[in-house]
Structure formats: structure tokens, C-alpha cells
View: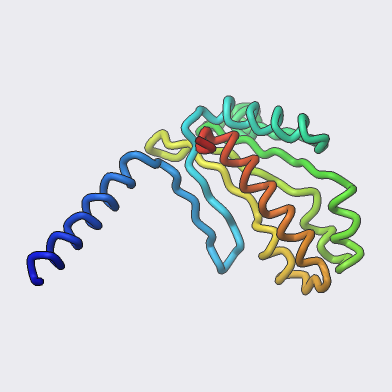
Length: 163
């Protein structure tokens, strides 16, 4: 019996360790600030370009792309590659604002793509459920879930983690 338990625990440990090497997906939600962070397998530029292509294919508008690194150069400063994408869809944002108009301060949605000090590229965005809590949105649960699922899919595709 004891050998069986040890064998089972060993297999679980090996699978868990193997999975951590095979699947580089690192997604986390910070419950304090509602920020979803995800590793990307691509450069900042490629990740941002992939995301823009994905949302535009879905009929979502890219309102603005801000290249923080290029802006830093304008003041003779250096910043690792960092881009902010501002995007949205009035077909989704308008119903959210009818649930609670203050959510308009957080719309349109934003996606930050940056390279950290070790060279790892990250994506981050505000989770729609966090926005719903922040703005006390009621009767929008289905829409919030739809938006959350779409953002998760779009960012995983952009990061190369959708396989």
C-alpha cells in the first residue's frame, strides 16, 4: 500500500514538473487590482501586431497604439520595449455602461505589452469581472463573461499560447 502511494505521488510530481516545462503559459490574476498578466512567446512588437490583427479580424476597433519606448527616446530616456493598445467595441461597451455608467472611465479596454529586465515579454489587461466589481455592475454577468472569454482567447493567441 505504501509503495502504491509513493508511486502515485511520484507520478503526480513528475507530471507537474513536466507540465511546467512543456506549457509556458503563465497567467495570473491579481485580485487586488484585477490585472491579468500573461507571458508571451513573441517579441513586444510581434505580440502587439498579432493582437491588433486578431481584434481587427473580429470587428473590434483599435483606437490607439502608444509606444512608450519611442516616447521615452523623445526625452533622451531609455525604456525597454513597451506598447499600450487601446481598443474596444461600442456593441459591448455601451451595454456595460447601461449597467453602470462609471465603467466608462475604464473603457475602452487597454492591453499593455512589455519586456521585463530578463527579456521576457508580458501582456496585461484589466479583467472584466474586476471592472464589474469595481463599478458595481449588475445584470451584466453574461456580457462580462463573454468579454472575459474573448479577451482570454485574444491574448493567448497573440502570445502564441493557444495551442
